[in-house]
Amino acid sequence: MVSMPAALRRLKLGRLVPLLWLGPAIALIGVVVLWPVVVMVQSSFQQIGGEGFVAGYNGTKNYTRLFDQPDFIPVLLRTLIWVVVVVAVTVLISLALAQLFHQRFPGRRVARWALIIPWAASVMMTALIFKWALDPNVGVINVILHHLGVVRQLGSSQADWLGNPTSALAWMMGVAIFVSLPFTTYAILSGLQGIPGDVYEAASIDGATSWKGYLAVTLPLLRPAILVATLINVINVFNSFPIIWEMTRGGPGYETATSTIYMVELKQGNVGQSASMSVINFLLVIVIVLVYLSTTRWKEQVDQ
Amino acid sequence: VITTTEPAPRIAARARSAPRARRPLRTWLFAGAAYLVALIFLLPYLEMLVMAGRPNNELGKPTIFPSHFTFSNFTTLWSGDGLGGSIGTSLQIAAGATVIVLLVALPAAYYTARRKFRGRTAFLLLVLATQMFQPAAMLVGIQREFINFGLPPTLSLIVVNAGFNLAFAVWILNAFFSSIPVELEEAAMVEGLGRVGALLRITLPLAAPGIVTALIFTFIAAWNEFLVALTLSLGQSPSQQPLPVAINNYIGQYSVDWGHLFAAGLVATVPVIILFAFIERRVVSGLTAGAVK
Image 1 (spheres, rainbow over the protein chains, first blue to last red):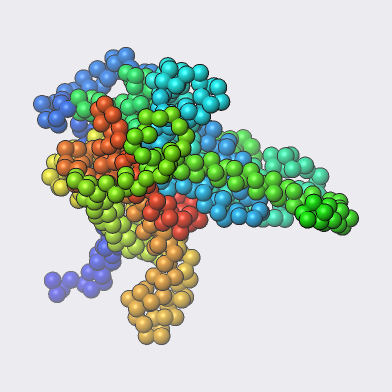
Image 2 (spheres, one colour):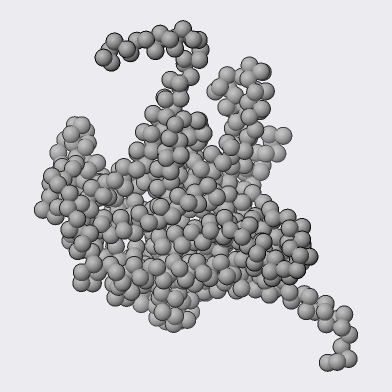
């Protein structure tokens, strides 16, 4: 040991220094994020019942049986519509809200503060409030709609918004948009604050009207903020669980289930099949992220 | 009195200059619209208060407001299998996850901000990747892994919540450490503070806003987390279940105890909203920083 050249020893120890600082973080990511993926993929090829007992290797049967489920394709299509509608509407409304909250007016701080409440509160609670408010007999939304004459009779099937798959999905998308607005608006607001004022002066000298100026000047400069906010929203909305779980449990049947809800429902009876659904879910997230990144980059190249 | 004095300032304002008089109106239009939006964002949570204070015998009445406000739902929250135990469990999970995140993220963020070394980019990419994946996407794996570990659910939830909030903490702390000039630390070391002294007396206090943001953000995320909590605390006694799961126990098979549910919801929500107000501005930069770099 003593004969070992000091330089060599220092080099070897030196290589280990980053591990000293980063090691705990890598270990935590490994245990909580990476290893579950391995377990999940492994489980997707095993026969595991609802109680978690492993009955043995199952080949690709979990996958082939999953593809044969009549609900499988509708669930995937619904997930796609869910993500596209919720994210698109969220970003459009947030662009308007950010513009509004970027203006100077008395009480702006307080108004902005109210905006963050759905973000800070748990999504589960927000979903439960709306579930209550849509109660066919006494829910406050129905009571108000009844006063306005939109809902003819309380307790009727017309008032049972969550009992009908189409209206249930529409309301749940509304809730998903509602809870996504604060972060998206704030992200775009911070983008707006990063645009120097003289850019607008230059635009107004060129005679751009406010709407034209917005399209020609503001929107392109907001691009990075919009891209990042959209990407984070896509991931959040795709994985969204509490809203549908609390409001309809994916029912009636699986008619309002997205892939995350479907995976959780499957888990109660057949963990192996739920694992294969999770793997597909997981691959979909990766595909969506890659497609999104490549199309936006592709557009960048076209624009230039 | 008012009617006689009112026209005078109007005329005066018009006399000053016509285009300038337009501006206050525009400002108030924006203000009015913004207040309206703020009210819409507030309404669902006000409804939670209205429901929590509604007398139980009025739960079946289709009225917007109850005849009077009662605190009985709040006072009875704590009796029997009450909420106290769940609040304790949730506090343990949120505080435990926050402590782990800070202990793990601080050295990683500091080192990546200060040193260039092989594997630095790979590490930051790994962190960014974890931000892209949420527990929902790998729930089955998490459930099977932690059941095999045989860890008690509360401890499992501490570790899982720490893992999924690490990325945010690393990004925001990394940004803060990068913005503190190395020269400041070196000067302190020359002054005889030593490396550790410089870190503790100079760098950490300057990074305090980032540390507070990471701390509050992790705490809130772990406090609100629902899906993994629901999965891992299944079959536990109600007082061992985290608050979001316990709140769901007010939902029975045939009826829902809305009064208690919303009273408990307020107890769970109000502190978190107040905490979040402290960090609102920096959260956006922490969430988007990773994706921009």
